[in-house]
Image (cartoon, rainbow, N blue to C red; front, top):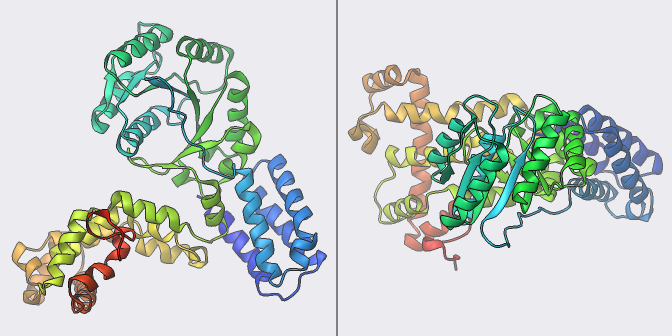
Amino acid sequence: MFESLSQRLSATFDRVRGRGRLSEENIRSSLRDVRVALLEADVALPVVQALIERVKVRAVGQEVLRSLTPGQALIKIVRDELALVMGAQSADLNLNVPAPAIILMAGLQGAGKTTTVAKLARHLKERRKKKVMVVSCDVYRPAAIEQLRTLAGQVDVLFHPSSPDQRPEDIARSAVAEARKAFADVLLVDTAGRLAIDAAMMAEIKALHAAVAPVETLFVVDAMTGQDAANTAKAFAEALPLTGVVLTKTDGDARGGAALSVRYVTGRPIKFVGVGEKTDALDVFHPDRVANRILDMGDVLSLVEEVEQRVDREKVEKLAQKVAKGRKFDLEDMRDQFLQMQNMGGLGALMDKLPGMGQIPDQIKSQVGGKEIPRLIAIIGSMTPKERRHPDILNGSRRARIARGSGTTPADVNRLIKQYQQMEKMMSKLSRGGMKGMMRGMQGMLGGRGPGGFPMR
């Protein structure tokens, strides 16, 4: 998300970043470019007008013109105002109520409500340590109930059964009673959607809301619908007491207009964003971090959190101990590192969170993301256990066989071996410092913490 907007804004600010002085005309010219970039990113016109006006008031005042680094001061103002438009700070779910805390999910058909219910259930179970139950009140869409049953099984949460011949309000009341009996902390209620907003849909969702009195009413909207996302969210906000918004399919939205518009248009905070199809692809929305990413300043905090959550500490610690004892880093270890990287979305996903990545052409980014890591894993998987443990025995005929088995070329295998040799040298250097030096060298992979999660000294 935001790739095209980030590139446009980076080009605009590169022209002012190094200047010793900025005039009012320079600033106005830059803001004209920012305005066009935002409109091309499908940001709603009222949002663009309000944002540019606020930036202009601050920028043409003393804040920029008297700054020692006026270019940087202007960028900071734009960054602050972008974050403000999106809500300034992340908004948490209100779960501080008698159990079960009921969360009602609303939205149009096709926005991804059912999948989002499963993602949110997993998020609450794994990160918030909550006992979660889910229920489907969608009695219109074929297989909607079975879809949620399947997803509930995948994320290992409680599922309350329902059937198409029941009334949505009856299903919801029954689920609330069952959640109390099961001592569930949270009940997620999936609702029916329509292809467009209509009176019948709004009447039904209002009746469902009245029946269960949810503590949170989240509007689920497809980010790829651009300005329509903001307009649809506004219509729902007028009909329901929404407490927040979930943006889905943000991984397929290169413009990002919805994220910049929804909060301003509805007055409701974006609480989560869907960043992929898998059930773990749901992120808490941090406006300040998103503003940093838009301006190509990176999102290192989110990167550290991702490493903390998804890196297998036990494997990292075992590798550290192995190499520290002088035992050789082998291709089995290398494959483990690739699998950990893939678990975090691959190199491309990690690169997107680093500062300055907006300046790297998409062609180069695509070479290190996507299929690259799975291909390397496939090459190592085509080796015998002996070959993985003793890479020195990989002669020409073995490499040709491995290439055939993995659907790659001998040149691909040779490149992998070269990468392995470089990593093996690095590990050998780290091990010379003993266990202490080794753990310090691998500190980054553990998010700044040592074995057992304790801070490094």
